[in-house]
Length: 494
Image (tube, rainbow, N blue to C red; front, top):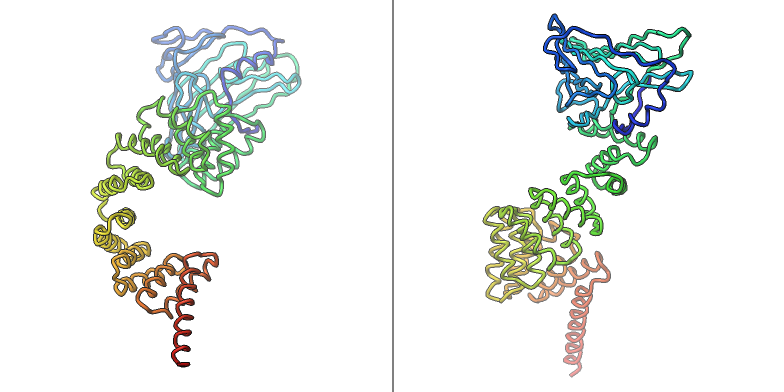
């Protein structure tokens, strides 16, 4: 018995398979059974131990009639057509094979095929996926299900059950040769492992699923279910798998007949992060059109995409639309405030940032943005800016940005002596920040401490030899010192 990987569209595949089934032996009628509460398709056996379903060619139950077979260790659900999925321990968290949750098509993650190796003809011992020419009997019992079928001179009986003391599922075949010649028969099992593992919460199992699904894609490329699962898994792996995620999601969008709105939102978000607005925007907008409950997330993603491309004016309405669904969504408030700031709406930006602070009063990043905005406004805003930076430092004592901001506010208020300790602390916390060294140098220069000013300008130039303010500041000091020396020399010559 062999196992394969991939995905099967039962209805389409069943139609293709019919031509491969042997027609050497005629199809017979199913034997009549005595049943209680018989409804034309199924009923209980006389002893009440089994529910027996008979499916003649062309007949179907109105919906899947399934049997749940489980022990404390393992379980499986089996329908009258043979559709099944299997789990260990917990039916939701630890699925071994895929659960499609589709009561209409009764799709499956498991299947068996019987093949006549002499002729190449094959069929299933269950009514699906490769239905034979004759009828099928299915008997659901307590802890087991039995399928019986006769095709091309081969009588088959498949019994499904699980062990009570171990995580083991059994599929027991009994074959009987009804023809008058020797036969070479094989049985092949199909188990959709990759998709099941892709839905696991266990990171190691999802990693294993990637390899299985990649192999499935090599065997048969561009299967929507495989590409959809790979798209999800690659995306979860982050930046290291970004290129694979984009490629898989791109193909998935191209080949899938339909994509769930929630999936469109996730894939659109992936393209937005690249960023690729041409692919992201149609998916995100379609997600909102198809499911209004996704409007908050989709609008935020669109706004973020436009924000990343520096289209502040176009981004702001989407952040406002996000806030219409959730007025307390802090990321949307912060991004809207930044859009307003970039658009010159300084008062509006401060008001938006303060709305954010009302929700998260100790958010250091927001306090810093408020402080930065106040620094660009009227001079009488500088004391408030300093107080705001002080609040940011209280919220996050490790923030070099808050230290630099407080120092800059004091410097702009001509309090160079008070500003120095803040700039020293910021350069100690973040020694590679060029601007911090430049501001400290400018503060020393204003305080007439030219030796230390030159030292800080030189540190800035070591980090960035092309830094204009540092070069200009250093040159101004050199020119000043040269003039001082010239004056001193002239005084001595008189």
